Amino acid sequence: MSETIEGSELQNGFQPQPRPEPEPESELKVESQPEQQPEEELKPEPVVTDVDPKPEPNNESSIQSNETTKQASTDQVAPPGRRKDDENRTFTMRELLSELKSDEDDAGSPYSQENTQCQSYQNNAAMELINSVTGTDEEGRSRQRILIYAARRYATALERNPEDYDALYNWALVLQESADNVSPDSTSPSKDALLEEACKKYDEATRLCPTLHDAFYNWAIAISDRAKMRGRTKEAEELWEQATKNYEKAVQLNWNSPQALNNWGLALQELSAIVPAREKQKIVRTAISKFRAAIQLQFDFHRAIYNLGTVLYGLAEDTLRQGSPNLKEVSPDELYSQSAIYIAAAHALKPNYSVYSSALRLVRSMLPLPHLKDGYLTAPPAGNSMAPHGAWKRTEFFLNHEALQQVIRVDQRQITRSLSGRTSDVTDMDKRAIRVDIPDIVSVSACADLTLPPGAGLCIDTTSGQVFLVADSWESLDGWLDAIRLVYTIYARGKTDILAGIITG
Image (tube, rainbow, N blue to C red; front, side, top):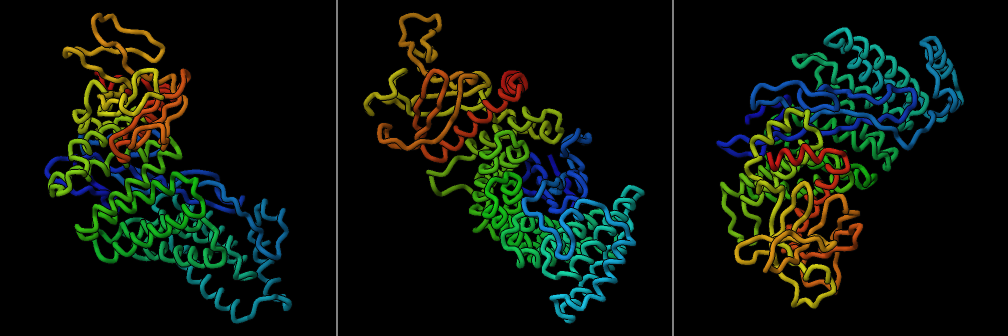
């Protein structure tokens, strides 16, 4: 499945087999003033949006890492010189012009004339850019008129108080959104010029208020958009590095943001396609950790789930092509299988997304059908988690839409038993096997307990009690944790039938 991307391609770098396409970023442009537009998408996505996607031709999909959604800011500061209640009403142009005149006549202003003139010059440069944007259609032109009005209001606030970081931040948003109204072939103004000016204002806003995490986040989006225009160049590499640093700062200031973590992972994925080969794998593994962290904050975040699948697929391709000298590294087959699990889960959560459907057709055969995941875990005798370490055995387990099931083979036949003691109708066999039904799960977590054998401990808290298992490695444990959580999330969202159709159909 080849991929056509507007601006830049999220490539995992492999040939000749097609690959699943990375999910667009969930980029949030955040406003801090109540008078701004309500939450909405600012950048159209050709494939993956929060509404029904457009159809794709066969296996080709246009993908753009440009979804923009707004969220409310926590810091709302009224510009000096204006009553707080004034912030919640719309000002007429006559009122704004009157304020400008009264400000010019105000001899008691705490800011020097030099600062005011400098700010005025900067405002004029930015206003010239915004005024030259016309929009590509009637809707765009109407929207641009609103943005121009907003820009004038922020210019007014900044001429009164050059240190009003809220005004700087919101003006940066206006410039960034105006860039979306510029036609792709426009040179005056260019989209890049508007984004560059937005970046300057984000820079100034964060200098004045270093804890303004929304500004760091949207600044990173603007830098990413500039990087996409430059392909696989050295300048693009520098911009992607700047974007990752700003996403990192945004996460440090607001750790509970799965969108920022997802976008950080995508920026790292883009950067990995430009840097020298010796640096690529480290960056890719860092991207994997960001996608995984986003999922851990929001288990049904299908965009991060899908993106994790694509980056794992790319890593599998690279590992297969280059070969791994370290036998302890995860094999390409295992990476392919992990990739398929995340893509299948994303499809189960959003079955109407055609990009997910196309990717699933590519990777479904890489699943251990009719299961979603299989592998080995060290387990105690059923019902006796406090058994001596010597009694624990490394045995095969599989996970499907119904349960996590231990497989005990006796005379080449499989027998099972649930935690409640129900047994299958098989005689003359050791019928004790661990089974955890998905609806019974309360929580799943890693654990480090001296009562467990050495290794990566896994604790599954169920309505029937706790089940303890040990994975072969901490990396293997991450895979089991994610898979179990995803299956439970799919069950909780009422999508079990879709997952069942994927692995048994």
